Image (cartoon, rainbow over all chains, first blue to last red; front, side):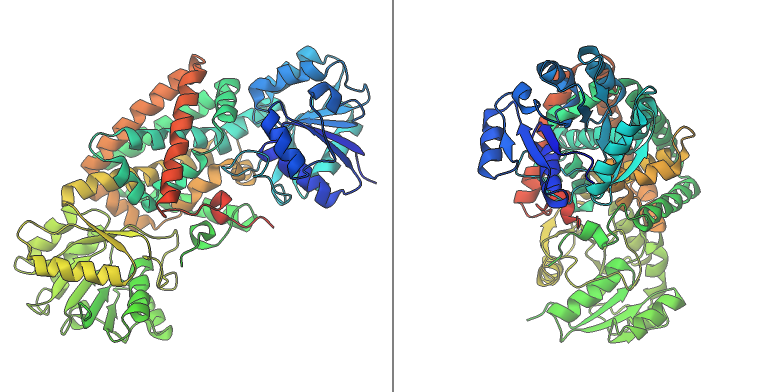
Length: 302
Length: 302
Protein backbone atom coordinates (compact mmCIF):
# COMPACT_ATOMS: atom_id res chain seq x y z
CA UNK A 1 0.00 0.00 0.00
CA UNK A 2 1.54 3.28 -1.09
CA UNK A 3 0.87 6.27 1.18
CA UNK A 4 -0.32 8.53 -1.67
CA UNK A 5 -1.76 8.09 -5.16
CA UNK A 6 -1.51 11.59 -6.68
CA UNK A 7 1.42 13.78 -5.69
CA UNK A 8 1.88 17.38 -6.80
CA UNK A 9 5.34 18.95 -6.70
CA UNK A 10 5.50 22.74 -6.87
CA UNK A 11 8.98 24.01 -7.71
CA UNK A 12 10.96 21.78 -10.09
CA UNK A 13 14.54 22.58 -9.07
CA UNK A 14 17.14 20.19 -7.66
CA UNK A 15 14.92 18.88 -4.86
CA UNK A 16 11.58 18.96 -6.70
CA UNK A 17 12.99 17.19 -9.74
CA UNK A 18 14.78 14.63 -7.55
CA UNK A 19 11.45 13.93 -5.84
CA UNK A 20 9.71 13.47 -9.19
CA UNK A 21 12.43 11.06 -10.33
CA UNK A 22 12.50 9.27 -6.99
CA UNK A 23 8.74 8.72 -7.03
CA UNK A 24 8.93 7.36 -10.59
CA UNK A 25 11.67 4.97 -9.48
CA UNK A 26 10.16 3.74 -6.23
CA UNK A 27 6.39 4.31 -6.59
CA UNK A 28 5.75 3.94 -10.31
CA UNK A 29 1.95 3.80 -9.97
CA UNK A 30 1.78 7.23 -8.32
CA UNK A 31 0.63 10.02 -10.66
CA UNK A 32 3.02 12.99 -10.40
CA UNK A 33 1.93 16.49 -11.37
CA UNK A 34 4.46 19.30 -11.45
CA UNK A 35 4.40 23.07 -11.57
CA UNK A 36 7.08 25.75 -11.60
CA UNK A 37 6.56 29.50 -11.75
CA UNK A 38 9.29 29.78 -14.38
CA UNK A 39 8.12 29.15 -18.00
CA UNK A 40 11.48 27.83 -19.06
CA UNK A 41 11.63 25.32 -16.21
CA UNK A 42 8.16 24.02 -17.12
CA UNK A 43 9.28 23.63 -20.72
CA UNK A 44 12.38 21.67 -19.70
CA UNK A 45 10.30 19.52 -17.35
CA UNK A 46 7.97 18.63 -20.24
CA UNK A 47 10.84 17.98 -22.63
CA UNK A 48 12.64 15.61 -20.24
CA UNK A 49 9.34 13.97 -19.22
CA UNK A 50 9.92 14.70 -15.54
CA UNK A 51 6.28 14.31 -14.44
CA UNK A 52 3.10 12.74 -15.75
CA UNK A 53 1.72 16.23 -16.18
CA UNK A 54 3.06 19.79 -15.89
CA UNK A 55 0.48 22.46 -15.02
CA UNK A 56 0.81 26.10 -16.06
CA UNK A 57 -0.57 27.41 -12.77
CA UNK A 58 -0.01 26.34 -9.18
CA UNK A 59 -3.77 26.20 -8.58
CA UNK A 60 -4.43 23.83 -11.49
CA UNK A 61 -1.65 21.50 -10.33
CA UNK A 62 -3.27 20.63 -6.98
CA UNK A 63 -6.92 20.04 -7.85
CA UNK A 64 -6.87 16.25 -7.44
CA UNK A 65 -3.73 15.80 -5.31
CA UNK A 66 -3.63 13.82 -2.08
CA UNK A 67 -0.13 15.17 -1.33
CA UNK A 68 1.27 18.58 -2.32
CA UNK A 69 4.96 19.23 -1.67
CA UNK A 70 6.23 22.78 -1.93
CA UNK A 71 9.83 22.78 -3.20
CA UNK A 72 10.40 26.52 -3.50
CA UNK A 73 12.77 28.84 -1.55
CA UNK A 74 11.46 29.34 1.98
CA UNK A 75 10.76 33.02 1.30
CA UNK A 76 8.28 32.02 -1.43
CA UNK A 77 6.32 29.43 0.58
CA UNK A 78 3.58 31.80 1.76
CA UNK A 79 2.92 33.21 -1.70
CA UNK A 80 2.73 29.75 -3.31
CA UNK A 81 0.43 28.50 -0.55
CA UNK A 82 -1.85 31.47 -1.19
CA UNK A 83 -1.96 30.59 -4.90
CA UNK A 84 -3.20 27.05 -4.20
CA UNK A 85 -5.43 27.83 -1.20
CA UNK A 86 -8.68 27.80 -3.19
CA UNK A 87 -8.01 24.66 -5.23
CA UNK A 88 -6.37 22.54 -2.51
CA UNK A 89 -8.59 19.50 -1.75
CA UNK A 90 -9.59 19.55 1.92
CA UNK A 91 -8.31 16.01 2.52
CA UNK A 92 -4.89 16.63 0.92
CA UNK A 93 -1.74 16.75 3.01
CA UNK A 94 0.52 19.70 2.35
CA UNK A 95 4.24 19.41 2.95
CA UNK A 96 7.43 21.17 1.93
CA UNK A 97 11.20 20.69 1.79
CA UNK A 98 12.31 24.06 3.18
CA UNK A 99 15.52 24.47 5.15
CA UNK A 100 13.92 26.50 7.97
CA UNK A 101 10.76 25.24 9.64
CA UNK A 102 9.34 27.74 12.14
CA UNK A 103 9.08 30.44 9.47
CA UNK A 104 7.58 28.07 6.90
CA UNK A 105 4.90 26.80 9.27
CA UNK A 106 3.95 30.39 10.15
CA UNK A 107 3.77 31.34 6.47
CA UNK A 108 1.66 28.32 5.51
CA UNK A 109 -0.68 28.56 8.51
CA UNK A 110 -1.45 32.16 7.71
CA UNK A 111 -2.99 31.33 4.33
CA UNK A 112 -4.04 27.71 4.97
CA UNK A 113 -5.49 27.84 8.51
CA UNK A 114 -7.36 24.52 8.25
CA UNK A 115 -5.06 22.41 6.04
CA UNK A 116 -3.25 19.27 7.23
CA UNK A 117 0.33 20.47 7.17
CA UNK A 118 3.29 18.13 7.80
CA UNK A 119 6.42 20.20 7.17
CA UNK A 120 9.50 18.27 6.07
CA UNK A 121 13.16 18.80 5.30
CA UNK A 122 15.24 16.20 3.48
CA UNK A 123 18.85 16.87 4.49
CA UNK A 124 20.33 16.19 1.07
CA UNK A 125 21.38 18.09 -1.98
CA UNK A 126 24.19 19.00 -4.31
CA UNK A 127 25.59 22.37 -5.37
CA UNK A 128 23.69 22.21 -8.68
CA UNK A 129 20.27 23.76 -9.31
CA UNK A 130 17.42 23.32 -11.74
CA UNK A 131 15.20 20.56 -13.14
CA UNK A 132 18.01 18.75 -14.93
CA UNK A 133 20.21 18.42 -11.83
CA UNK A 134 17.89 16.13 -9.86
CA UNK A 135 18.30 12.38 -9.55
CA UNK A 136 16.22 9.55 -8.08
CA UNK A 137 18.73 8.41 -5.45
CA UNK A 138 19.42 11.82 -3.88
CA UNK A 139 17.52 10.97 -0.68
CA UNK A 140 18.68 7.38 -0.30
CA UNK A 141 20.43 6.84 3.06
CA UNK A 142 19.98 10.52 3.96
CA UNK A 143 17.73 11.82 6.77
CA UNK A 144 14.42 13.58 6.28
CA UNK A 145 13.19 15.59 9.27
CA UNK A 146 9.45 16.03 9.80
CA UNK A 147 8.27 18.82 12.10
CA UNK A 148 4.53 18.37 12.66
CA UNK A 149 2.63 20.78 14.87
CA UNK A 150 1.35 19.52 18.22
CA UNK A 151 -2.21 19.14 16.97
CA UNK A 152 -1.31 17.35 13.72
CA UNK A 153 -3.08 14.00 13.39
CA UNK A 154 -0.75 11.04 13.78
CA UNK A 155 -2.08 9.34 10.63
CA UNK A 156 -0.83 12.19 8.43
CA UNK A 157 2.63 12.01 9.97
CA UNK A 158 2.71 8.23 9.46
CA UNK A 159 1.85 8.65 5.77
CA UNK A 160 4.61 11.23 5.28
CA UNK A 161 7.10 8.98 7.07
CA UNK A 162 6.14 6.10 4.81
CA UNK A 163 6.50 8.34 1.73
CA UNK A 164 10.07 9.35 2.59
CA UNK A 165 11.06 5.86 3.66
CA UNK A 166 9.85 4.53 0.32
CA UNK A 167 12.18 7.04 -1.34
CA UNK A 168 15.03 5.49 0.67
CA UNK A 169 15.37 8.15 3.38
CA UNK A 170 15.55 7.73 7.16
CA UNK A 171 12.96 9.80 9.00
CA UNK A 172 13.32 11.73 12.25
CA UNK A 173 10.64 13.80 13.94
CA UNK A 174 11.41 16.91 15.99
CA UNK A 175 9.94 20.29 16.84
CA UNK A 176 10.33 23.08 14.30
CA UNK A 177 12.39 25.08 16.78
CA UNK A 178 14.84 22.26 17.42
CA UNK A 179 15.09 21.58 13.69
CA UNK A 180 16.08 25.18 13.08
CA UNK A 181 18.85 24.99 15.69
CA UNK A 182 20.18 21.63 14.49
CA UNK A 183 20.25 22.80 10.88
CA UNK A 184 21.92 26.07 11.83
CA UNK A 185 24.78 23.89 13.08
CA UNK A 186 24.94 21.20 10.41
CA UNK A 187 24.07 23.28 7.38
CA UNK A 188 23.35 26.99 7.66
CA UNK A 189 26.45 28.23 9.46
CA UNK A 190 28.73 25.94 7.39
CA UNK A 191 27.23 27.47 4.25
CA UNK A 192 27.59 31.00 5.60
CA UNK A 193 31.23 30.42 6.46
CA UNK A 194 31.91 28.84 3.09
CA UNK A 195 30.33 31.79 1.28
CA UNK A 196 32.31 34.15 3.46
CA UNK A 197 35.70 32.51 3.02
CA UNK A 198 35.27 32.38 -0.75
CA UNK A 199 34.30 36.04 -0.72
CA UNK A 200 37.27 37.02 1.45
CA UNK A 201 39.73 35.12 -0.74
CA UNK A 202 38.47 36.76 -3.91
CA UNK A 203 38.61 40.26 -2.42
CA UNK A 204 42.24 40.27 -1.26
CA UNK A 205 44.52 42.78 -2.91
CA UNK A 206 47.73 40.90 -2.00
CA UNK A 207 46.77 37.50 -3.46
CA UNK A 208 45.29 37.40 -6.97
CA UNK A 209 42.13 35.55 -7.89
CA UNK A 210 44.20 33.50 -10.33
CA UNK A 211 46.42 32.33 -7.45
CA UNK A 212 43.40 31.46 -5.33
CA UNK A 213 42.07 29.28 -8.15
CA UNK A 214 45.40 27.61 -9.00
CA UNK A 215 46.22 26.65 -5.43
CA UNK A 216 42.67 25.86 -4.33
CA UNK A 217 43.44 22.14 -3.92
CA UNK A 218 45.05 23.04 -0.58
CA UNK A 219 41.59 22.99 0.99
CA UNK A 220 39.87 26.11 -0.33
CA UNK A 221 38.13 24.26 -3.17
CA UNK A 222 36.16 22.18 -0.65
CA UNK A 223 34.45 25.40 0.48
CA UNK A 224 33.66 26.53 -3.06
CA UNK A 225 31.32 23.60 -3.59
CA UNK A 226 28.75 24.64 -1.03
CA UNK A 227 29.41 28.31 -1.83
CA UNK A 228 28.11 27.47 -5.33
CA UNK A 229 24.66 26.58 -4.02
CA UNK A 230 21.54 28.41 -5.14
CA UNK A 231 21.74 32.10 -4.04
CA UNK A 232 17.99 32.70 -3.72
CA UNK A 233 17.41 29.59 -1.67
CA UNK A 234 20.24 30.44 0.71
CA UNK A 235 19.40 34.12 1.07
CA UNK A 236 15.93 33.01 2.18
CA UNK A 237 17.29 30.44 4.62
CA UNK A 238 19.42 33.04 6.42
CA UNK A 239 16.64 35.61 6.56
CA UNK A 240 14.20 32.99 7.86
CA UNK A 241 16.38 31.24 10.44
CA UNK A 242 18.00 34.38 11.78
CA UNK A 243 17.97 33.69 15.50
CA UNK A 244 19.47 30.20 15.38
CA UNK A 245 22.08 31.18 12.76
CA UNK A 246 23.22 34.18 14.79
CA UNK A 247 23.37 32.10 17.96
CA UNK A 248 25.55 29.38 16.42
CA UNK A 249 27.67 31.94 14.59
CA UNK A 250 28.40 33.62 17.90
CA UNK A 251 29.58 30.31 19.37
CA UNK A 252 31.79 29.70 16.35
CA UNK A 253 33.28 33.18 16.60
CA UNK A 254 34.24 32.54 20.22
CA UNK A 255 35.91 29.27 19.27
CA UNK A 256 37.78 30.82 16.34
CA UNK A 257 38.99 33.59 18.63
CA UNK A 258 40.31 30.95 21.04
CA UNK A 259 42.24 29.29 18.19
CA UNK A 260 43.53 32.67 17.01
CA UNK A 261 44.90 33.25 20.47
CA UNK A 262 46.45 29.77 20.58
CA UNK A 263 48.27 30.50 17.32
CA UNK A 264 49.41 33.93 18.48
CA UNK A 265 50.82 32.55 21.74
CA UNK A 266 52.22 29.40 20.17
CA UNK A 267 50.00 27.03 22.18
CA UNK A 268 50.59 23.90 20.09
CA UNK A 269 48.93 21.56 22.59
CA UNK A 270 45.57 23.35 22.33
CA UNK A 271 45.72 23.07 18.53
CA UNK A 272 46.80 19.42 18.60
CA UNK A 273 44.03 18.45 21.04
CA UNK A 274 41.30 20.00 18.89
CA UNK A 275 42.70 18.54 15.65
CA UNK A 276 42.67 15.06 17.20
CA UNK A 277 39.12 15.40 18.45
CA UNK A 278 37.74 16.54 15.09
CA UNK A 279 39.27 13.51 13.37
CA UNK A 280 37.08 11.22 15.48
CA UNK A 281 33.91 12.98 14.33
CA UNK A 282 34.79 12.34 10.69
CA UNK A 283 35.16 8.66 11.51
CA UNK A 284 31.68 8.55 13.10
CA UNK A 285 30.12 10.24 10.07
CA UNK A 286 31.66 7.64 7.78
CA UNK A 287 30.73 4.74 10.09
CA UNK A 288 27.12 5.91 10.08
CA UNK A 289 27.01 6.02 6.28
CA UNK A 290 26.70 9.81 6.08
CA UNK A 291 29.83 10.29 3.94
CA UNK A 292 32.06 8.44 1.53
CA UNK A 293 35.16 6.79 3.06
CA UNK A 294 37.03 7.28 -0.23
CA UNK A 295 39.95 9.73 0.13
CA UNK A 296 39.19 13.28 -0.98
CA UNK A 297 35.43 12.50 -1.23
CA UNK A 298 36.23 10.08 -4.06
CA UNK A 299 37.42 12.81 -6.38
CA UNK A 300 39.14 11.33 -9.43
CA UNK A 301 42.95 11.41 -9.34
CA UNK A 302 43.99 10.10 -12.73
CA UNK B 1 67.35 12.81 -19.48
CA UNK B 2 65.92 12.54 -15.98
CA UNK B 3 66.83 15.36 -13.58
CA UNK B 4 68.00 12.99 -10.80
CA UNK B 5 69.30 9.43 -10.55
CA UNK B 6 69.17 8.71 -6.80
CA UNK B 7 66.38 10.28 -4.76
CA UNK B 8 66.06 10.01 -0.98
CA UNK B 9 62.70 10.59 0.67
CA UNK B 10 62.72 11.25 4.41
CA UNK B 11 59.29 10.87 5.97
CA UNK B 12 57.10 8.18 4.40
CA UNK B 13 53.60 9.51 5.12
CA UNK B 14 50.93 10.49 2.59
CA UNK B 15 53.19 12.85 0.61
CA UNK B 16 56.46 10.91 0.94
CA UNK B 17 54.85 7.63 -0.06
CA UNK B 18 53.02 9.29 -2.97
CA UNK B 19 56.37 10.66 -4.15
CA UNK B 20 57.94 7.20 -3.95
CA UNK B 21 55.08 5.72 -5.94
CA UNK B 22 55.04 8.60 -8.42
CA UNK B 23 58.77 8.24 -9.09
CA UNK B 24 58.37 4.49 -9.64
CA UNK B 25 55.57 5.19 -12.10
CA UNK B 26 57.12 8.04 -14.07
CA UNK B 27 60.91 7.62 -13.59
CA UNK B 28 61.40 3.87 -13.16
CA UNK B 29 65.20 4.00 -13.54
CA UNK B 30 65.58 6.33 -10.55
CA UNK B 31 66.79 4.62 -7.38
CA UNK B 32 64.56 5.61 -4.44
CA UNK B 33 65.80 5.36 -0.85
CA UNK B 34 63.42 6.02 1.99
CA UNK B 35 63.66 6.69 5.69
CA UNK B 36 61.13 7.36 8.42
CA UNK B 37 61.85 8.00 12.10
CA UNK B 38 59.03 5.62 13.04
CA UNK B 39 60.03 1.91 13.16
CA UNK B 40 56.56 0.73 12.26
CA UNK B 41 56.40 2.99 9.21
CA UNK B 42 59.74 1.67 7.97
CA UNK B 43 58.49 -1.87 8.43
CA UNK B 44 55.33 -1.16 6.43
CA UNK B 45 57.38 0.57 3.72
CA UNK B 46 59.54 -2.53 3.39
CA UNK B 47 56.57 -4.87 3.39
CA UNK B 48 54.72 -2.97 0.63
CA UNK B 49 57.98 -2.48 -1.33
CA UNK B 50 57.57 1.28 -1.39
CA UNK B 51 61.23 2.10 -2.16
CA UNK B 52 64.29 0.34 -3.54
CA UNK B 53 65.82 0.63 -0.10
CA UNK B 54 64.66 1.72 3.36
CA UNK B 55 67.42 2.99 5.66
CA UNK B 56 67.24 2.77 9.44
CA UNK B 57 68.81 6.20 9.98
CA UNK B 58 68.34 9.49 8.18
CA UNK B 59 72.10 9.88 7.76
CA UNK B 60 72.52 6.50 6.05
CA UNK B 61 69.66 7.25 3.65
CA UNK B 62 71.36 10.25 2.01
CA UNK B 63 74.96 9.12 1.47
CA UNK B 64 74.73 8.71 -2.31
CA UNK B 65 71.65 10.83 -3.09
CA UNK B 66 71.57 13.58 -5.71
CA UNK B 67 68.17 14.76 -4.40
CA UNK B 68 66.91 14.60 -0.81
CA UNK B 69 63.29 15.53 -0.15
CA UNK B 70 62.17 16.11 3.42
CA UNK B 71 58.53 15.04 3.84
CA UNK B 72 58.14 15.59 7.59
CA UNK B 73 55.97 18.09 9.52
CA UNK B 74 57.45 21.60 9.20
CA UNK B 75 58.30 21.69 12.89
CA UNK B 76 60.62 18.68 12.42
CA UNK B 77 62.53 19.98 9.36
CA UNK B 78 65.44 21.51 11.28
CA UNK B 79 66.05 18.40 13.40
CA UNK B 80 65.98 16.09 10.36
CA UNK B 81 68.33 18.39 8.44
CA UNK B 82 70.74 18.29 11.39
CA UNK B 83 70.66 14.49 11.32
CA UNK B 84 71.74 14.36 7.69
CA UNK B 85 74.13 17.33 7.69
CA UNK B 86 77.29 15.24 7.97
CA UNK B 87 76.37 12.62 5.37
CA UNK B 88 74.73 14.88 2.77
CA UNK B 89 76.83 14.86 -0.44
CA UNK B 90 77.97 18.40 -1.23
CA UNK B 91 76.54 18.29 -4.77
CA UNK B 92 73.09 17.03 -3.68
CA UNK B 93 70.03 19.24 -3.87
CA UNK B 94 67.91 19.35 -0.75
CA UNK B 95 64.19 20.05 -1.01
CA UNK B 96 61.05 19.59 1.05
CA UNK B 97 57.26 19.53 0.77
CA UNK B 98 56.38 21.68 3.79
CA UNK B 99 53.28 23.85 3.92
CA UNK B 100 55.08 26.95 5.22
CA UNK B 101 58.24 28.16 3.49
CA UNK B 102 59.90 31.06 5.35
CA UNK B 103 60.18 29.01 8.55
CA UNK B 104 61.45 25.92 6.72
CA UNK B 105 64.16 27.83 4.86
CA UNK B 106 65.33 29.40 8.11
CA UNK B 107 65.41 26.00 9.84
CA UNK B 108 67.33 24.31 7.01
CA UNK B 109 69.79 27.18 6.50
CA UNK B 110 70.73 27.13 10.16
CA UNK B 111 72.07 23.58 10.02
CA UNK B 112 72.98 23.39 6.29
CA UNK B 113 74.56 26.79 5.60
CA UNK B 114 76.25 25.74 2.33
CA UNK B 115 73.76 23.26 0.84
CA UNK B 116 71.84 23.82 -2.39
CA UNK B 117 68.30 24.20 -1.05
CA UNK B 118 65.26 24.44 -3.35
CA UNK B 119 62.22 24.43 -1.08
CA UNK B 120 59.01 23.10 -2.58
CA UNK B 121 55.35 22.64 -1.74
CA UNK B 122 53.06 20.42 -3.79
CA UNK B 123 49.52 21.73 -3.22
CA UNK B 124 47.89 18.33 -3.08
CA UNK B 125 46.80 15.81 -0.52
CA UNK B 126 43.94 13.87 1.01
CA UNK B 127 42.69 13.64 4.58
CA UNK B 128 44.43 10.28 5.06
CA UNK B 129 47.91 9.83 6.55
CA UNK B 130 50.63 7.20 6.53
CA UNK B 131 52.69 5.14 4.07
CA UNK B 132 49.72 3.16 2.79
CA UNK B 133 47.62 6.22 1.90
CA UNK B 134 49.89 7.53 -0.87
CA UNK B 135 49.30 7.03 -4.59
CA UNK B 136 51.31 7.76 -7.74
CA UNK B 137 48.85 10.22 -9.32
CA UNK B 138 48.39 12.52 -6.30
CA UNK B 139 50.36 15.36 -7.90
CA UNK B 140 49.05 15.03 -11.44
CA UNK B 141 47.40 18.25 -12.62
CA UNK B 142 48.06 19.92 -9.24
CA UNK B 143 50.47 22.81 -8.67
CA UNK B 144 53.86 22.55 -6.99
CA UNK B 145 55.31 25.84 -5.72
CA UNK B 146 59.09 26.25 -5.58
CA UNK B 147 60.49 29.04 -3.39
CA UNK B 148 64.24 29.30 -4.12
CA UNK B 149 66.33 31.89 -2.33
CA UNK B 150 67.69 34.82 -4.34
CA UNK B 151 71.17 33.34 -4.58
CA UNK B 152 70.07 29.83 -5.57
CA UNK B 153 71.65 28.70 -8.84
CA UNK B 154 69.18 28.58 -11.73
CA UNK B 155 70.28 25.06 -12.77
CA UNK B 156 69.09 23.58 -9.46
CA UNK B 157 65.68 25.23 -9.82
CA UNK B 158 65.39 23.92 -13.39
CA UNK B 159 66.12 20.37 -12.23
CA UNK B 160 63.49 20.58 -9.48
CA UNK B 161 60.97 21.97 -11.95
CA UNK B 162 61.69 19.11 -14.32
CA UNK B 163 61.31 16.60 -11.46
CA UNK B 164 57.85 17.83 -10.50
CA UNK B 165 56.72 18.17 -14.09
CA UNK B 166 57.73 14.56 -14.72
CA UNK B 167 55.46 13.60 -11.81
CA UNK B 168 52.63 15.38 -13.65
CA UNK B 169 52.52 18.60 -11.63
CA UNK B 170 52.47 22.20 -12.84
CA UNK B 171 55.23 24.31 -11.32
CA UNK B 172 55.10 27.92 -10.13
CA UNK B 173 57.96 29.88 -8.60
CA UNK B 174 57.42 32.58 -5.97
CA UNK B 175 59.10 34.06 -2.92
CA UNK B 176 58.73 32.20 0.39
CA UNK B 177 56.89 35.17 1.87
CA UNK B 178 54.33 35.30 -0.92
CA UNK B 179 53.89 31.53 -0.76
CA UNK B 180 53.07 31.76 2.92
CA UNK B 181 50.40 34.40 2.29
CA UNK B 182 48.85 32.57 -0.68
CA UNK B 183 48.67 29.31 1.24
CA UNK B 184 47.22 31.03 4.31
CA UNK B 185 44.29 31.92 2.02
CA UNK B 186 43.89 28.75 0.00
CA UNK B 187 44.75 26.19 2.64
CA UNK B 188 45.67 27.22 6.18
CA UNK B 189 42.70 29.41 7.12
CA UNK B 190 40.22 27.02 5.44
CA UNK B 191 41.68 24.21 7.54
CA UNK B 192 41.56 26.30 10.71
CA UNK B 193 37.92 27.21 10.11
CA UNK B 194 37.04 23.61 9.32
CA UNK B 195 38.67 22.39 12.52
CA UNK B 196 36.91 25.14 14.44
CA UNK B 197 33.43 24.54 13.07
CA UNK B 198 33.69 20.80 13.74
CA UNK B 199 34.85 21.58 17.27
CA UNK B 200 32.03 24.06 17.88
CA UNK B 201 29.39 21.64 16.62
CA UNK B 202 30.60 18.84 18.84
CA UNK B 203 30.70 21.05 21.94
CA UNK B 204 27.12 22.35 21.85
CA UNK B 205 24.92 21.42 24.74
CA UNK B 206 21.66 22.08 22.84
CA UNK B 207 22.38 19.87 19.81
CA UNK B 208 23.69 16.34 20.40
CA UNK B 209 26.73 14.88 18.66
CA UNK B 210 24.45 12.17 17.30
CA UNK B 211 22.30 14.85 15.62
CA UNK B 212 25.35 16.58 14.19
CA UNK B 213 26.46 13.29 12.61
CA UNK B 214 23.02 12.28 11.31
CA UNK B 215 22.30 15.58 9.63
CA UNK B 216 25.83 16.30 8.47
CA UNK B 217 24.90 15.95 4.79
CA UNK B 218 23.47 19.47 4.99
CA UNK B 219 27.00 20.83 4.48
CA UNK B 220 28.81 20.10 7.73
CA UNK B 221 30.32 16.85 6.48
CA UNK B 222 32.29 18.75 3.83
CA UNK B 223 34.21 20.45 6.65
CA UNK B 224 34.90 17.22 8.47
CA UNK B 225 37.08 15.92 5.62
CA UNK B 226 39.80 18.53 5.98
CA UNK B 227 39.28 18.56 9.75
CA UNK B 228 40.40 14.90 9.65
CA UNK B 229 43.87 15.82 8.35
CA UNK B 230 47.03 14.96 10.26
CA UNK B 231 47.05 16.82 13.63
CA UNK B 232 50.86 17.09 13.98
CA UNK B 233 51.36 18.39 10.48
CA UNK B 234 48.66 21.02 10.90
CA UNK B 235 49.71 22.13 14.38
CA UNK B 236 53.15 22.80 12.93
CA UNK B 237 51.77 24.71 9.94
CA UNK B 238 49.85 27.11 12.16
CA UNK B 239 52.74 27.65 14.54
CA UNK B 240 55.11 28.25 11.61
CA UNK B 241 52.94 30.50 9.43
CA UNK B 242 51.54 32.55 12.26
CA UNK B 243 51.70 36.04 10.79
CA UNK B 244 50.02 35.23 7.47
CA UNK B 245 47.37 33.04 9.09
CA UNK B 246 46.46 35.71 11.65
CA UNK B 247 46.33 38.37 8.92
CA UNK B 248 43.95 36.39 6.69
CA UNK B 249 41.89 35.26 9.67
CA UNK B 250 41.40 38.91 10.63
CA UNK B 251 40.10 39.67 7.13
CA UNK B 252 37.74 36.73 7.28
CA UNK B 253 36.44 37.79 10.69
CA UNK B 254 35.60 41.23 9.31
CA UNK B 255 33.72 39.70 6.40
CA UNK B 256 31.82 37.26 8.62
CA UNK B 257 30.85 40.16 10.88
CA UNK B 258 29.50 42.01 7.85
CA UNK B 259 27.37 38.97 6.92
CA UNK B 260 26.21 38.60 10.53
CA UNK B 261 25.02 42.19 10.42
CA UNK B 262 23.29 41.63 7.05
CA UNK B 263 21.39 38.70 8.55
CA UNK B 264 20.48 40.63 11.68
CA UNK B 265 19.14 43.57 9.68
CA UNK B 266 17.51 41.46 6.98
CA UNK B 267 19.67 42.80 4.16
CA UNK B 268 18.85 40.11 1.59
CA UNK B 269 20.50 41.96 -1.30
CA UNK B 270 23.93 41.91 0.35
CA UNK B 271 23.60 38.16 0.91
CA UNK B 272 22.34 37.49 -2.62
CA UNK B 273 25.16 39.52 -4.20
CA UNK B 274 27.87 37.62 -2.33
CA UNK B 275 26.26 34.22 -3.00
CA UNK B 276 26.17 34.98 -6.73
CA UNK B 277 29.80 36.09 -6.84
CA UNK B 278 31.08 32.99 -5.03
CA UNK B 279 29.31 30.74 -7.54
CA UNK B 280 31.47 32.18 -10.34
CA UNK B 281 34.69 31.27 -8.51
CA UNK B 282 33.63 27.63 -8.30
CA UNK B 283 33.11 27.66 -12.07
CA UNK B 284 36.65 29.01 -12.66
CA UNK B 285 38.17 26.33 -10.42
CA UNK B 286 36.40 23.62 -12.40
CA UNK B 287 37.28 25.21 -15.76
CA UNK B 288 40.93 25.26 -14.76
CA UNK B 289 40.91 21.59 -13.83
CA UNK B 290 41.38 22.18 -10.10
CA UNK B 291 38.20 20.37 -9.05
CA UNK B 292 35.79 17.75 -10.22
CA UNK B 293 32.66 19.03 -12.03
CA UNK B 294 30.69 16.01 -10.77
CA UNK B 295 27.92 17.03 -8.33
CA UNK B 296 28.84 16.67 -4.65
CA UNK B 297 32.53 16.08 -5.53
CA UNK B 298 31.50 12.86 -7.25
CA UNK B 299 30.33 11.23 -4.03
CA UNK B 300 28.43 8.04 -4.73
CA UNK B 301 24.63 8.30 -4.51
CA UNK B 302 23.44 4.77 -4.99
